[in-house]
Image 1: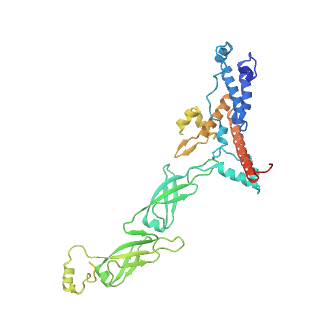
Image 2: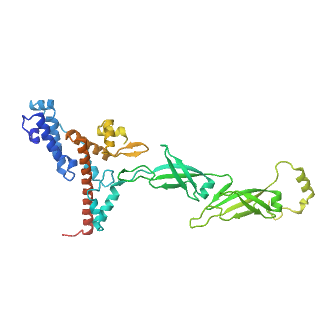
Image 3: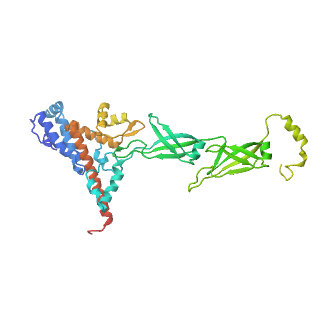
Amino acid sequence: MRSPYEILGVAATASAADIQKAYRKLAKKLHPDLNPGDKAAEEKFKEVTAAYDLLGDADKRKRFDAGEIDASGAERPQHRYYRDFANADQAHPYADASGYADYMDSDDAFAELLRRSEQARANRRGRDLHYSLTVDFADSITGASKRLTLPDGGTLDVTIPPGLVDGQILRLRGKGAPGAGKGGPGDALIEVEVRPDPRFTREGDDISLELPISLSEAVLGGKVRVPTPTGDVTMTVPKGSNTGTTMRLRGKGAPHVGGGHGDEFVRLKVVLPKGPDPELEAFVEKWDRKAFNPREDGAS
Amino acid sequence: MNKQQFLSSAGLELRTLEFWIEQQWLLPDRVSDEDTFSETDVARAHLIHDLKGDFGVNDEGIDVILHLVDQLHGLRRAFELLQKDMQRSSPRQGT
């Protein structure tokens, strides 16, 4: 076994400064991370650092010179070198293509190969950030612009596309966490909850609504105002309408994927005035109630 | 691993780590304002530590060395890909 003096290439009488100089000169040449392709460098480097750990410490050196300790057991605790990670297959933020960027500009297969490798490794995107947002039912049908306040105090303008469904996730490219190194930022993923509107129900791209009408509107017909996601419209209730009569407002639903819109179905519901109405009672008394029996055709 | 675990794995002081991150020698992942570190970061911290402590490299020197080391690994990777690609496209050549 070579003595630590031999390993460092210094005389036994060398000064502490000379020992350090000799060690640095060798270690710089042998450090595994500065010799990523040289498997033997690691062993040589370990030998040199072990020798320096002994001789670079005045007290240990004195005890070694006096024969109290030997050169064994002075090895440093093991650690994995950076080269083991830098060459691994998975992307890491330190990968750098600038050493061959000029070769990537050409059209040949080699350049294509390099471009692919750079995409896979050099650019680590930032993380996607997840947010949630609640929108009104009407906005989910017609679309809207919303401003989301972020936990860090910033804001994000979110465009709600027309016809959005509850639980849909919107992706805002580049609005996530910043990337490391040369990687671009991640995306913001916004899960949108649609706040239900007690008036409307959505089925696919159609929406439906129950519209209360008065007895006289049902019997005589008339114009009524109907809420839609884009605001109220006027609809004509035909004479003799009944509870359950359904009218269609074309194009008032959510947009279809391929173009066009769904419809709004308005289901009429005849509602009598609240509380006793002596006038109505007197009128119905006069009216021949036996003339019409809605249960006659088997309906209960 | 979080910052505390990283400091003990890499044997660093918090102030040193902050300086290294500021210099962009280390690029931790930032998840909702918290830095997270990988084994790659630990190994890289050991390299920086060796360069500064044992080899007496100053801060400017670290910048240059890390940049060249990163390029060297990029080149090694490109070389490896090229080698694999050549083996795939002509597996029997020379036999």
